[in-house]
Length: 136
Length: 447
Image 1 (cartoon, rainbow over the protein chains, first blue to last red):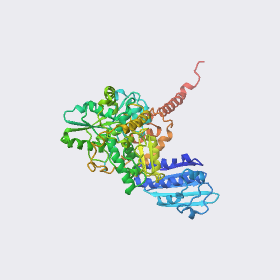
Image 2: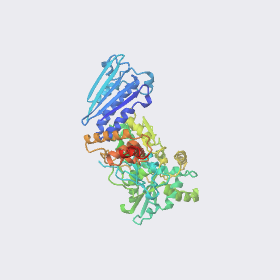
Image 3: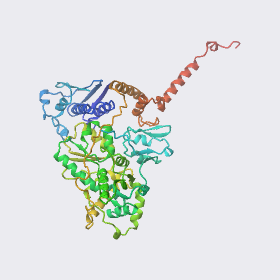
Image 4: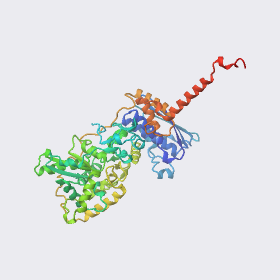
């Protein structure tokens, strides 16, 4: 089944609503707890990144009998050095975001750690697309 | 492994239920539906939190507990009462614990053992686990049975985060029985009675979570014991107070939010109350946002147990009284203190069984079927008005869409869908009515 969510720019208080909704559906589908946890963490980190770094964006989720596929597309500033962004502890988050407890530099590493397939494409000035798949 | 969501104390009194929508809309787990003008509780979803008891204006919900008569059961030769510390917070004019405990004995109990004393032993065990053992972070308190049931249903991925310690009631009950046995009574001659602030603890006392059997023989609600106690307390002269208080000041703190996690050895703790808030915090734990917190104290009721559905006075006032009770208790000169103390090693402080998630596969037996049902539910939901009026008997349009697909409830139970169908039918009739037989459409002859 397909689900789609729009993430709004700068809405820190609402960040996580999409991953929360997906979690609810996965629980109803009786997906094993450890798998839900992986998807929740990976998707939450990606959703937060959209709020902190990009101007919001669109999340499409496809739940299939054997896997969950999540695509996050934003039209934000893009990431100049993806390899650097994949390193633990690297962050370019604003002071405002850090005050809220974000920006520990674990975003992309956590997405990678909690997914079975991970792909990130980014173009400076155009935006970033993140693809995450977790096997069920 | 055990399914903890099968036993309940919350029930409906059908004669009093008028089939309104108050409870269905307030139930935090959407466990109630109105069917045939009466509320019905889905036992797979009910966590015994007692919110429906609190909100029903017709008092059509209750928690099944024992009446005070249970202590006169002749089976019992020796009766020990184990009061929850929240009981002490209920008396505006008398904040002496010895007054409350003396009055309890006058009601007909032979001895008293305070649950707050057991709570202190649990705190020590909790600190030990947090500081000396490998455990996932954050650990979540196992003290509130409604929260544990909620987690078993909605947060299966957090089962390993539940603090594996016994509930203070279970420790107190087991210690109370042993205390009576040391006095020479046989185990089956001893009656252990718990005074409960809530429905969830009433259920858990009879059917303990993570243990094989309960040492509790009866549960009496604070509401049922309140008046008899107050009447006795009003007549008691302070010189008559027996020295029964076990001076468990920290343990008494458990009755209100923040008390359980107040121990300074627990470094990073948060205390959350109210089920909606608890759900929000647990969502954050699930998303890995609270990994640097060591311990979460979570209470289903606002203000903690002093705000329980079976208490009598307002939880916020009770919280203030509890503070005074603790101050007063600290100033009582030598009391029997720990003379009825619980010998080290005599009771189990750890949960025996792992708590398992309560998954009842509502959406389908396998993933393919469940996904198909979810898609059907989405399709029905898209047609509904989304104003969550509750007239269909379900708490919101989403729950109604689930009921239509999974339980075969007719979609016309939605009054908006019904009106739409009536309108369509009426239009169709009007259309038909407009179609005059050609024999009647011409001008009448002779005009």
